[in-house]
Length: 445
Image 1 (tube, one colour):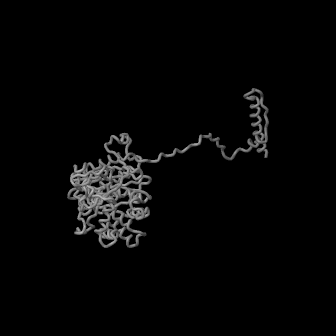
Image 2 (cartoon, rainbow, N blue to C red):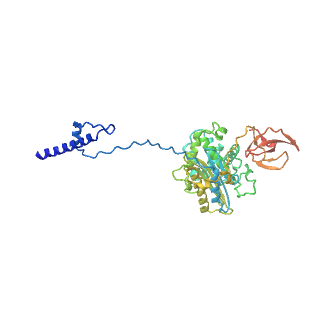
Image 3 (cartoon, rainbow, N blue to C red):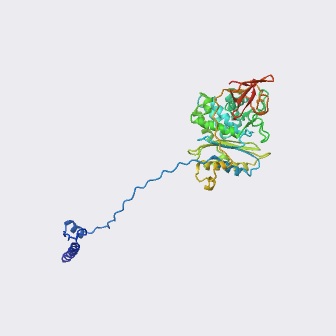
């Protein structure tokens, strides 16, 4: 007890001494002595030390704000074209490609209108026609045909789909329907004259003339039975994508016969095509890719839609080497092109700052956007016996190109010109050129 009392006396004495010194110091503002008061609170503070240290107050800071990241937008496609050309510079053969930005419709291409063998690539137009023919959901048997045609690249099942399109057991008739449909869509370089693994039939055309296969300067020895171009494939895939979103040329041309749900189902079926090579090898495995590949000995190709987040795109590629094209060569090159395209549309660091410092206009490549369809009456090429009609620079003048049988053109307001027993009319071709054709070989749809 005596010890506790002594301690308390010492503490109180220390407090009184402090207060006395403070009183002597006075008010710092007036110099007057302050009154010392020992309040109960002061005693409580002095006699009961806190169990834990008292933290010093934290200085108030300005509230921080998180900057909103700038949404990624891929650079001009001209940069991708330069990267593609660097990859293809060492390829000993003829390469064709087209890439379409499905957001802006801008595109880049190289040799995109060169005729190539149709291979299994023309199964894409067969699938479009199959869905257009169906009035209801595919039956289990029809679903199997579609699935095997896409995933197993079945030739037999593709021919059965041609019979479905024809409405009778005649794949040649179905092939003719597919060809007419492609030309109705302005895809004049795509046709199927002879179905898969069949011989020419005397009642049908063994081949077709197209603007592409009339170009002898760039030649890939295309299969006369079925042909296409990387441009036609890319454009058709773009149409399918737009259709799945409820817009575009397919719905305009085939209103009521083709629906957005059917186009979406077609793309879903194409996503099941897994080969772990070509375009697929250049895209992460968790990124949806709707594609169809095909090859023969000298020509390998792949065409598809990559659903790369906010920037889906079409990529269509074909490689040709005279005689024989090694699989190891083609798949490595196409995979690399696919990888570059994916990086372009998804990776802000795909190009160095030094590369991007060069304006696109100085790269020697220009991305293009499609021109609007002219508001002109359409005519269809007919009664040419499959030869097509020659487009000339003037009535009876120099040859410009050939419009295939069944293809469309737009008739301009130029007055018809009679010459040498024929009536010549001026037309605007789907390729963007104008010229003169004999009126006997065109008719209104």
